[in-house]
Image (cartoon, rainbow, N blue to C red; front, top):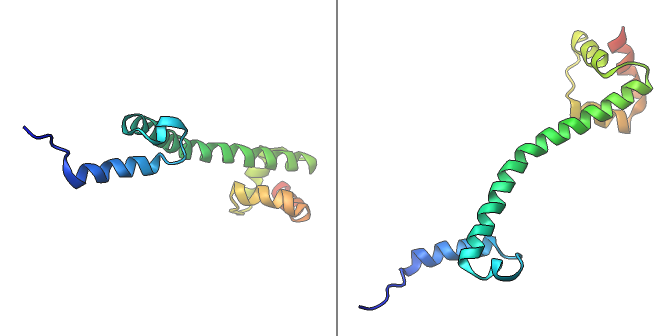
Length: 115
């Protein structure tokens, strides 16, 4: 019986995996089996870390806003509560950028929130 090499579909599948593994070191970018293992692990890490990134950035923004609020003599929770009562709907990303790039405008927001 002649050996079956599976044709173009298998080649296309293997090439896809090896292309994703380009840049990996050693046999991980050359051998299909090890490349498959490495790519599967990398894809699962990428999926997980896309979600982790959102958490990490939110924590960073809150830390920045908190530090800027303390410099203006108010706590983070009081600032956020005051902004909510004053119907100022700025998200934490914008507030943290404002605290860094435009401290005067942030100080005005603190005055509005504390009033």
